[in-house]
Image 1 (spheres, rainbow, N blue to C red):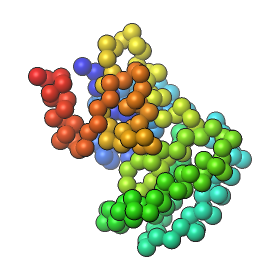
Image 2: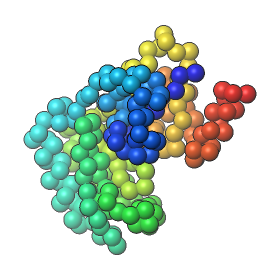
Image 3: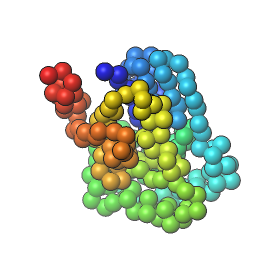
Image 4: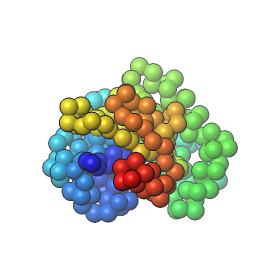
Length: 209
């Protein structure tokens, strides 16, 4: 069994969540959906959204986002409303600098009022010509990236001839979630999980029994 990790966050965030040196722990590690790809600890590729879209379009998105968020009325706003990553832009109405408690409180408001969902709908209309995909993930933010740069991007590093099956485990597997595209891909067998414990239990039943 060959194990790989794929996530939307950058490598430092992955290391914060999973431990330092994660790119060398597993045979494959894909940060930013595979735009930064490691195989056996060696860097394979780095692709960037700035190179793909051009600086003028990046500036348009940033300016529009800041204007839109200025009019979003929520109890708390912190800092880092736009996190610019090499392969995507991560947008957070509350700001990524919020505390864990503020994050949990915001998630409840967001679910009730559809703040991120409404903002995504507005951006889809505003930037229809740029060929962008919007993916709501986690508690406080959503990702913006060129269409096709979702988690299925990493599958190009897993040649079909090398693997009998590719199983994917993720929690945001619903339509619009940041695991949906790879979960429903013809290349994968998708599994919805609810926690690390659930993931361990499902893997044990599938591969160890």
